Length: 121
Image 1 (spheres, rainbow, N blue to C red):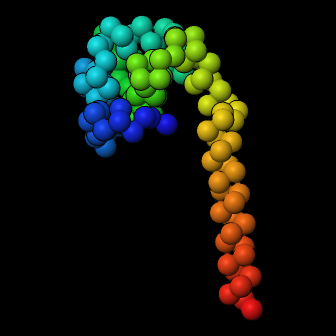
Image 2 (cartoon, rainbow, N blue to C red):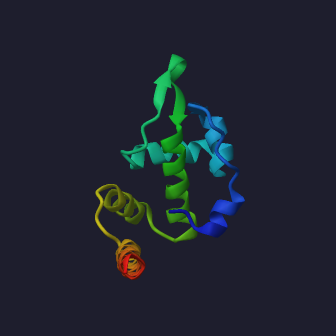
């Protein structure tokens, strides 16, 4: 999902349930005002709001923000292109890389079947 080089520069996500906007900002290397803007643009990004309208992000939202960041800053997508890509990925539609992965898995299964047939003789 994330570019390997990009993933290496981001800090690991701690194992906790909720993250403040400041924590997410540090974890994803994105300023808080950018996160608030992305909330308006990406409907999948919907943090829980509590007392005083404070935002609390869950782990899956932090991962989504990292994906959005990668699409925009690393892969060069526009906001609208990133929206489409995320919707396509969420909808399970296959991208060229997904098709390649499926082909590799199918080939591996075929090879395993051949090994099983040889071993059973």
